[in-house]
Length: 528
Image (cartoon, rainbow, N blue to C red; front, side, top):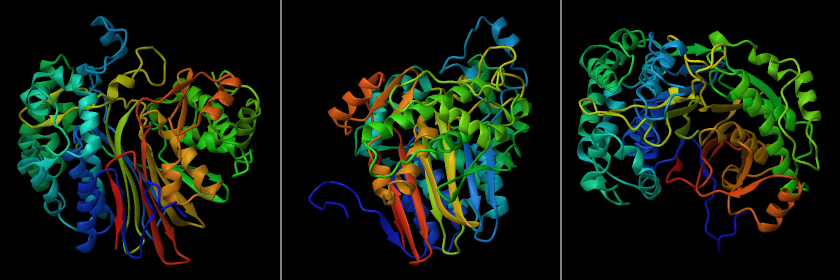
């Protein structure tokens, strides 16, 4: 039980339906839809649409989306709503323009946004309420304004330079030349009009006609290679794909396959499954093992992952028992090591939400514009802020993540779904760019190895081994940090909270839904 004398949150309990998001207005919008009789899909779409307005640094309709959906009596399904590069894009073409890499604010970092195609396909096949009803709150907030919440205001101020680099983004997001403060009211009327058009006309309203023409003209004016045909080809561009999975402590963990990094989370779990990670393990030893598994798994990610149509290695092969054993044996218990590739083989801003409805349908959905304010490039006529996921592409011939015509880049965003005996147990997800795969493994270990309740597992101090350093939150004590340094880790203090998370545990024995939402963000889990 939580110490009620100390600040903190309890796990949210409800019996019929629940939603957990990282923004209070998003959670309330989804809960409203559930109360009206809408299903999990309806609530998820309503919630993410609101967050695309009220949390513009983290997400938007100019971004991408991945989701896992588990109908009460159906299999886990994965939907890939990530966009593709323009048909004219290639390593050769970008090199001819004098580029050696794709900058984060470059028009070449903008692949065709895939989120709207994903939302509309999901709604067409599994929704029950009309889009205009699901978008009502988002449209109202965009047109009439919304109060800026404290964490959003903090991030807005921290990353205002990105918006300042584009005259249209600066005019919208830095009124009077400065970012809004917590409690200030902000509106995005052009975005509201675009949402109205999508509510009436579906994905065609976004990828065809005047909205698409305006986005294409904006991107071409910034030097992009985009054409109308690139957008028109994305009308039905979201794809249902087979999820990938592994077993951990008697549960089945499902992730979306590449071009996302879900396989990295599963590789980490496979390596960690060979260690006792119970409560008796010291914090330093636990962090060390997670760090070593992360270094190995991310090394494979950067070498092997990209568009699934261009991979040289089947991701399922990376989840084999022999590979997990070989990689696990390369982990030293008493020394930080350099990452090692399997011998057979040659970052950051996102929103995540979970929903479970009264019928037991569960959805795990993540929507992203990648970095804060994405590319920082805004189309003033449509109000669409473009993501910069294409900055993940490599300008290296032959690399699986090399840019190419209509290719999808490697993605960091990954929803998760935990199941047991064919039934959904927990839709879950962790935001935070590159951290997400490591975050999945750490969160599940907290629940399944340590027996933490959902909120406690979300609140637990975080660390992340990436790019040569081990970043630790300040809640990790000094003695633990000293022990990690003694093991050979380069430990640095995190300047900002590492990621965010939401989850809903389906407790069938007690007839309860147990929800958690990260205190590092503004959101909440609510149910009835």
